[in-house]
Length: 177
Image 1 (tube, rainbow, N blue to C red):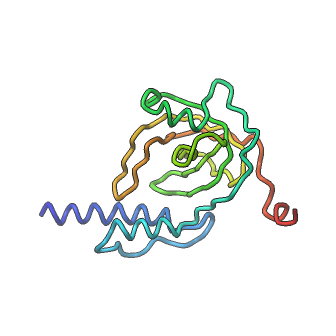
Image 2: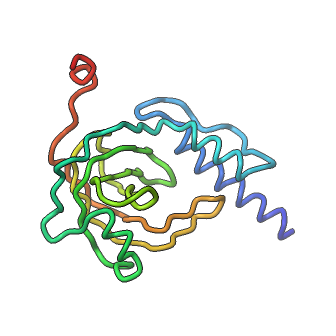
């Protein structure tokens, strides 16, 4: 009985994750009608890697620290002390994942930090900014957050407000340059 209930709960969780990961922004695509039955963790990772996430290379030079805020590297370095506290960070959006686990996910970089401490993952209910936008995010720091199925984060900024300070050039404009 317990094992069947656990499998059902995992299947429902996978469906929820896949429904957010498999949809493109503004797309009418629907989540799979049935949940995966085996190798669930690997199937979720594969689906997540094929998401509508949009990652771009952006110029990270000359990004000033938010007034009273932190850099991405400082948030990583002070994550344990900052856990549970509100923080502001200015940076550029390098990747977005819409509607995963009921939230929009945004990756922000400001040019600080080394590989592994240079990309701040942010969750928000706000409208999803575009990759390349200069933003100031303000949210609560969570340290060592583990969602299971291989999704663990040393630091997250959760439930953030996202203010776009400078929009990225439209795709047509960028392509013509």
